[in-house]
Image (cartoon, rainbow, N blue to C red; front, side, top):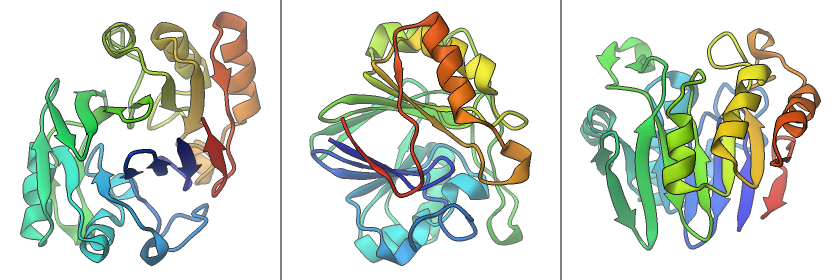
Length: 226
């Protein structure tokens, strides 16, 4: 399986399917490519904020693929001419042999695209079961049910935000890693803008002092083989 970090919380996961997560490309100063260059089979959106919904709709239209998201966002993208696959907390859906389960995140989720204020439902994370099981936490603080996510789904890879201010910071994200117990942790949602500036190597050091997970630090555009 290949995982490419596209900056911020955006990833392209290539296993049985090419799964694009939270494709904030346009306006992302760390994005290593243009939105129109991305090819994928399905898109996941964790919540409605512009730095996560991002370019999901034009990329979906170009690739003729659906967007998996919470019910309210799925309804919204359908009004924009894209197939929406709606889920809610604890629900799962299978698409071309890849299983997507929606899990809780603690954040907010208004859709603010083009100045349009619209309820984005609740923010979410995803457990994606493809060649490996991946947990993308979305934007979230630390919460104790992360222990349950680790126990129920046993993700091998966890993508955790470390930027602080709008999400948990490195210290809380390290605690999350200890609770979830993945083989690999990939930090995200940092150094896109000054407000979320962090040193990922400090996060790596924190994780390594409290659990056995390997922290894999990416540069935008770098592909990991896992």
